[in-house]
Every structure is written in C-alpha cells, then in structure tokens.
Length: 555
Image (tube, rainbow, N blue to C red):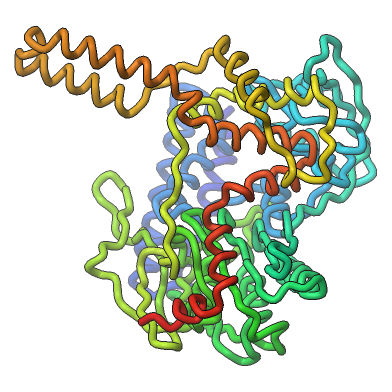
C-alpha cells in the first residue's frame, strides 16, 4: 500500500511540474504564477487526501469528480471526454457508428425498443417497437444498467450480437442474432413536395455531410416542381460549424460573409465566407425555428434573416452563440472547449446566457433586455442580439394539456398504440398522412385508459389547494367550507371530462404513436403534419408572394 501511495504521489508531482512548465510557456506571466500555484496546491491536496483518508480512494473516480466540477463552473458546452466516451462523441459529430440500428429506451422500468430504424439490421431481424430486451450476449440487462447498453450493442461492423427479447404481447422470450453494420444516422428524416409546388426539408442535425444532403434534397424537390422551399430547423441542436456555412452557401452568392468568430486568442478571430456558386439565390425560402433550434441552426437562420434571404417562422431560438473546439489530451482523452463567440453578418451575437457572470449559487443569468443591442439587416430591418433569434413571424408555442402530458409521461399512449397494432393489421392506406382514428376507435381508447392509473394534478387544482390554505390562515375557511366543497366537486367533474374536452389533441398524439408502428420514422413525422401550425403558416406565406415580400421589407 505504501508503494502505491508513493507512486501516486510521484505522478501527482510530475503532473504538477508538467502543468507548471506549460503554464509558463503559454500564459502571460501574471496568470502563469497563479496557475502554477493552484496546480501545486491541488496535487499536494490530493497526495494528503489519498494518503490519510480513512477509506481507499478510486483515483479515476476522484479525479473525474474534480474535472467535472471544473468544467461545470465554466459553461455546459465545455466538457471532458474520457477514452471510453470517444466513440459516442464521434457518433454525435459524424452520425456514424457500428451497431444494429435501433433506439432503445426505458419504459415502465423495462428496456424497450423505441424505434428499429429503416434499412438496418434491427429492422431486418424483426425487432418491433415495444419489444423488451432482456439480455445482450451473456449480459442480463435492465433499466439499472441502461447506461451500459450502448457499449453492449455497438461494435465492429460484421461482428454478431445475440439478444434475448420478449416481443410485445408474447409470453415467451425469443433469441435473435444480429450482425452489426456501419449505421449512418440520416441528416434528413423527411423531405417532400407539399401543395404541388412547395418543397419541405427537415434537417435533424449538422453532422458531417448535412449540407450536401440538403443540396441533393432541394435539387430533387425542384425536379418534382417545387418553386419554393421550407427548411425545418425546429429541434435541431446544431453541430458542425462548416456544415452551417455550406448550407447557407446553397442560397447565398459566392464570397459573402456568413459568420465571424472572436475568441481570447487570435487564432479564433476568423471570418467565414461563402466560397462557391449557390444552388439557388432566388427561390423563396421559409425557415422554421423554435426554442430548441440552437448553435449551427441559429447561424443558418440568422444569416438568412440578416441578408433578408428568407422568412423565419416559429418561436424564439435557443440562443447559443458559442463556438467549441476539441483538443487532444493524454491517454486518448479529449476536451471540448468553448473558444469563441460567433457573430452573424449584421454584427450580432445571439448568445442568451452570460456564463462569465454567475450569482453566489453559481447560476448564470440571461442577458437582460436593457443590454441587448439593435442591428440592421441588409434591407434595413431591425434585429437584436443577446437572446436568440426572434422570428419574422412569431407563433405562440402550443402547450399540451395536463392530461395529455400525463398520458405521455405514464407511457399510456405508447402502450395503447402497441395494443392497437397487435389487434389490427396494417391499414389500407399508403402513408401516415391518410391514417386517422375513428370516433369509435377513440371511445375504445377512453374505455381502455379508464382502467389505468392516469391520476394527475391540474394547475387549477394546485391553485384551489393554495386558496384553501390561504382561507385557513386567514380563519375564514369554516364560513366558506360549503362553497369550497361545491367548487371542488365541479373541478373533479371537469377533470373527469378531460378525455372528451381534449379529444382532438389526444387523438392526434395517438395517431402519431400508431403511425410510428405502421410506418416507422417517416410515419411519425407525417402524422403530425395536419396539426402543425408553423408548417401551415409557412405554406400560407409562400402561397402569398406579396405578403412574403412585405415581411422581408418591414422596418
């Protein structure tokens, strides 16, 4: 044990020396001393804790805790990536991995197949939504070891993995052998022509090759008669900076500024321009965004807005104006560091949260409206920095009713969709666009769900309980008790009727779940189109050229 402690202390000393040398080589003299001093304090602290602490320490776990705390003190995007996390990180940036091609999740404490993706080994092997996974090779799996699932399912293409599953509705288990393949996550979950001449393209994320995929999709849509384009960036978290530049270049002329970055060190002070001829400079364009459109999505939408090249529709975007760079570390580890802020051509940075100033609890705050600055688009429209992108046409976000949220969170819509598909063969329709539940189907669901636990508390009930507490504090409850009881009874009756009151909303959600079973990812997307307010507004704008131009000229 003594040798082990001496060895660890020696490593700590060597690390301290290395960091001190690096600090003096790369930092200004005043910073270098502070860095060296604090690293030496840390290494001597670790030496003493490791030597004297009553229980044996796990060096990796202890150091990881320290590293994570340091990263957390900066911003959510500066993160340490250990050697065993590299593959997952590579998947997020390239969209590729070796595996079976299925999304697995936890439902009611069980590991369930959420989606076997099209043209993958999982789909060809017969895995279906709702199947429960019990074992992978020799390892029994459950919700408890969910985090290990990726490591067990992923592997070199050509290798085999054996699953023991319990198909939904079955009483016996089944053994399935699946040969892993190189899985490529699609950038484009969906694209098609609407209303005869409006092209629609949905981009999921900015992984490698995303812009090229958009180009091919737009070319195909134009060949099918599309005279305008809707680019759907809703819920797109961003990704690679150069892919956002390449995408913008499809609609803007060569050699115009797309984005600039400014950092602490000069190598990150860059201006990026379009570098090739565009695909189409004049085709009318609407970009859909919402509160989950971030980073590269915001670069694309912001540039389109700054050049008055298209109309933004939806809700205010997330507000991530920070640029990250990945740096190599020892022992095959990496660190992703926020190295700069980005600025759209008008000069605005849309970063919404100021991580450089935090309160005593370590919480960063949003940039106040009083500090936001106005900028001008090329055509003279006023736009602002500091809080994400404000769409040109703002539509209020529609929140789900409490009962709908409850049915989703308790997996009751998911369960009923499995039951429905188990009993009914695939409907005689070509796509999810044509599928709908009848009133009789919905009544069957109402009868089914009433035997399930779907208890929930509405905002009205919460406020009612607060009112009662206030009445008791002010000693007027006894005088009002009869009125309270009557009101409570009426609230309960209204709640019982929620399945009917919110019938249209719940039925839409059910149809989406069921279409996912019949038509998989494409069906999941198509089933939502008939209730998509932002999409409907985009189509309306593109069908009215005069309004489209008025929006772009509005000062």
